[in-house]
Image (tube, rainbow, N blue to C red; front, side, top):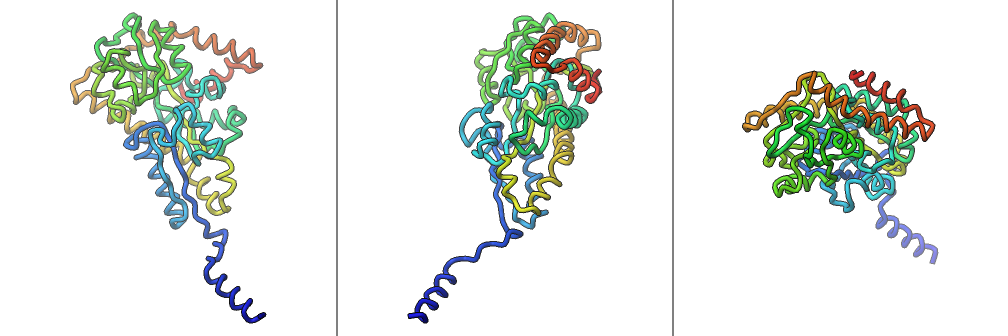
Length: 342
């Protein structure tokens, strides 16, 4: 009987695979975001990042992408999808969850951001100094900005402040909407995927949005005029974006895979985002001009007129922060100093 038991144990042992040693564990990260798979965020930043981790880990880290909200929900729910483990990693805009992350919102106030590279470095430093508590539920992998948002319109060109009056424009954040209202426009909230059709049907006149979105969302097909400040001057609005990882997923990784995630994120991923956005923005500007669209550059006096009109937005925000015992003016001054727009 003892011999039979030993023989049966040997057979069962042969049928059940040995548990992998910790060093050999493999992981597939589910990565979700709100844009099509062709967007630069996936094609030029997140996929190369995943390829780097795959190489560093000798194939043990892999990624599965879920673009355009394929895991369900809305863009505003992406932060919760990462927090709750529906996705392992998300690329999203904290501002889509209005009022939830008020400190990082500092970089979405009017005329803080002038380009993708400087502002992405700046918002990462700002997060490390002031906003870590807001994101304590996550493993934060990177912050960056869209580099600033221009006016993209279908029928009416924006050449000065009065031209904005009455324009219905899609805006991406709470601060963007408040800024547009202060400038005389009417903000309309909708997901990026719906904007092109809304412009084509005349529901909105255009969008206050980043250059990077023009081709992935086909805004280039329905807009004719594009208005931005002169080089080196801050844009009226911007969107902060972030890469968030489920904390439990990160904690479950063996030490060597954690080290790879750490090595390829933070400063390294921030720099990758900033460089890609700068390149994409420049290429989009070139392509849109070659397409025959008109690009309008506001001179310093025109830009200053917009700044003055939007001044009340930052004043109101500072008052709101004071109600939370937060020195909003100090935060805004530091943000502009970091971004080089003070």
